[in-house]
Image (tube, rainbow, N blue to C red; front, side, top):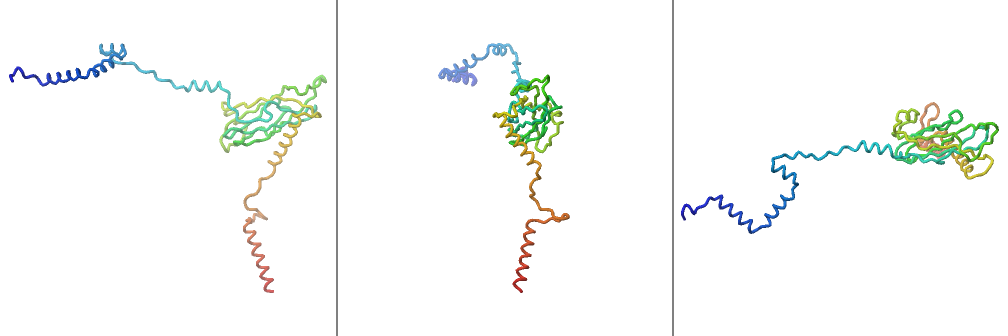
Length: 268
């Protein structure tokens, strides 16, 4: 072999690769199609040496949108009221009459409630507010002085009165005691549960609403009497001037005394 027949090793390697591509043309097709699918702007930038400075837009936090949407949505109620829309009073001019309403905490947290009225001089509530545990209920009694109608006009029964009662609720932590200032300190968290209108009923007549009112008043009185009773004693009883006698100790002393009596009787 002459020196001219000898070829450069790099040239030989290139020829081998070229022959290999001829044998497998689909490799070349695949590389061409991948390059052709690029964005024309990207090809232009790559040919002219431009750097890709495109930055994908960063999504802004949706806290502002969610807060606005939350303010537009109706607040979730925490209390279930019975009756739910009106407060019924027997119509007895010149007397103080009563109504009753049952409040139940249907939420999963402790909830404080508070009454407000448009006629504070002639109306008041017992209790005016409180804290309910989850699932707890309470009967509230509402007192109202019924004034005589002006110009001897007869009061229309079963009609809405101008007097209104508003019941508000507030989520609180367990162990928090009710004070009216709670609702002033956390105004943004207060929920208006319901605005109740007053309806007068015929005190001498019989109706389903009047019967229900009497039944609820009886239940409210029973609940008040139950709250007045002292809680049952579960610990040791205090007898005399601070002497603590445990129930077990009392039974033991009686047993020992009985044994002594039996021993005296057997010896005699």
